Length: 254
Ligand SMILES: Nc1ncnc2c1ncn2[C@@H]1O[C@H](COP(=O)(O)OP(=O)(O)OP(=O)(O)O)[C@@H](O)[C@H]1O
Image (cartoon, rainbow, N blue to C red; front, side):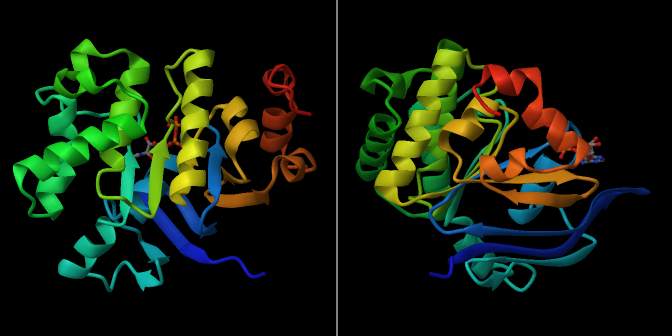
């Protein structure tokens, strides 16, 4: 059966000043998959993610999300697209002056007009969905552990019931147990909500544990896509080093 492509990136080039970071990159994201995006530090994983969600411009190429060319989706149509994705930025990035409940309600206030009791009910549901205790609702980010911050940020990313979530290094800064629990949560949400997950990660355990497919970035392009087994067969030096190194062996890969 043909895969349903919900993000289609073709020939995309992104740069800053005289530096080209992404250079003619192609990538497909399939509905319902957990896609792991890997690459060395500074290869442009975050830049590409931000470009897909319209936060930074591209110099060339085309990006379609849910069949819509993002350059043609201006104004209200872009807002409609934005409602269909949730984003968990690196380091969680909650608003420190807002409680967890208020953080989750930020996208609700931005995109919908709902009564306060309904917004409270949605926040309560999202808090439960990500495995936080109900009393987390009124806590500020400074009162939360790293793992709780990630969960709260995920709850905010899920506020609008998105089709796809973009996660930028969701397990960075978590201890191995916390990272494992977060991976399980992501997988469970994918299975129960039918989410598509686009996850930038350096975490080999996460890649092995929950990703259906991996896309590897190097030299401004996607140099390989496929399963972990496909990655292990690749001959590109970075891939050989990354997936065949000591850390990979200790993660039980290779
Ligand atoms: N707004 C910007 N202006 C200028 N250069 C930028 C900007 N944003 C990112 N860059 C540069 O683009 C390159 C890619 O950055 P990016 O954050 O996407 O890397 P990454 O692959 O996500 O790295 P890491 O794995 O370390 O998070 C880096 O050299 C970075 O300095």
